[in-house]
Length: 94
Image 1 (tube, rainbow, N blue to C red):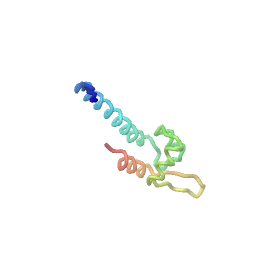
Image 2 (spheres, helix red, strand yellow):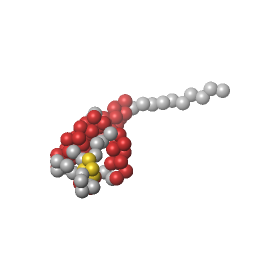
Image 3 (cartoon, rainbow, N blue to C red):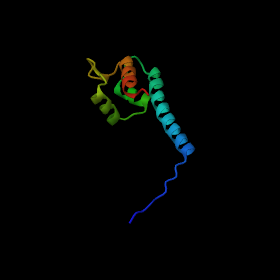
Image 4 (cartoon, rainbow, N blue to C red):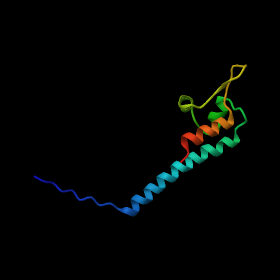
């Protein structure tokens, strides 16, 4: 027994959906990059998370992916703003 299932692809709708999804991803990544301009030269973890709208889990993943952190003499963990920009560009640029 053979069953035939007709598949109708609406090319215009599919193309519009692909473009829409791509634009959302692009917008998210651009927002991450532009949000780094508001950072101080050496933001703390909290400043970085707040400026980029991320949580501790995401920051930990980025550190595991290679984002370099600095431990200052006061014991606070800070990040070089230019290093954050470099990391985002290398890992999330479209």
